[in-house]
Image (cartoon, rainbow, N blue to C red; front, side):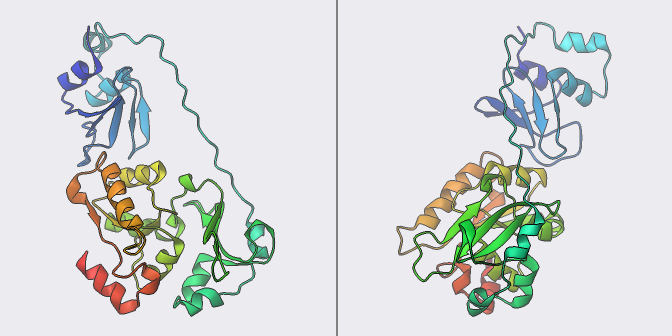
Length: 295
């Protein structure tokens, strides 16, 4: 009986084993990404992360061989059967928030200006202070997607010793922020710096480093990984906080994130480059420039 592996290797695919699936370069188009194409081992269903194409194994064969005849297709699929395959994939609809909510944010930028962030940068990110509601006494940033829709909010506490520094509203695992502002920059550079918080982003942005994406914590989400695969990122820099005095939480998280990315990228494409101080907010313009020149 023919298997997915037998069929696809016979038409030129170099398959990499990823547990329940294979990964490969999509040989039906120009690509240098050896993991852009994912194929289910049992069913042969496939998805191209870059072009967002997908389908069954028959469609993949036709696409690869440039539309072979039905007779040729049947030869390749001879002895291949799929039984009792169920599609249990749940697609979560991302909530969109009304832009009218931005009116409720008081344009008081003093907290960040005192931390060295310019007013020009803060106005670009459209944040402000919430005086009531779930984000009361927090400086709140609207989270836009690349279509300029608000998909959530992230608020930094203004208290001196808050129990929770950052609070989020919305499905942060689906966020890829701030692509509304820097998607074209990232696409042109094919290089992405991943940081923990919006505070790190603001400091880097003010220093002219704008190819940054916020992880909103110390994990790297599947949404972010999918984006990196889709743009065929050539260099990914993991720059979580340098927590030397806190059990090296950020350092260990960066190593964990690197191992996660190694399932999709070559090791030479991934680098850990922590800030030279605890975080980028504690570094001045020149220190950030020196850090950037070394990565």
